Image 1 (cartoon, rainbow, N blue to C red):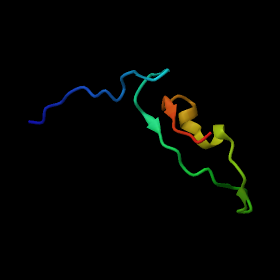
Image 2: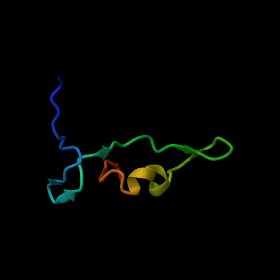
Image 3: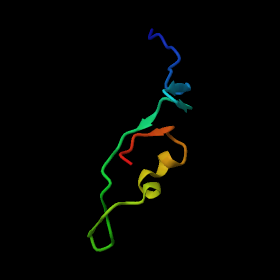
Length: 65
């Protein structure tokens, strides 16, 4: 039988001065976006780009901003 134990993934953690609600981090991804004609936009708005993470699904967004 496989032994199960509680994971620390959803436990709060202090990282320097940051107090995080959990240990889930959204990694930085490409910021490129296209308009309706397929032309690359200069920079996508942070809120639109990071979507779910900006609404509390992850506690820390690893971002170059």
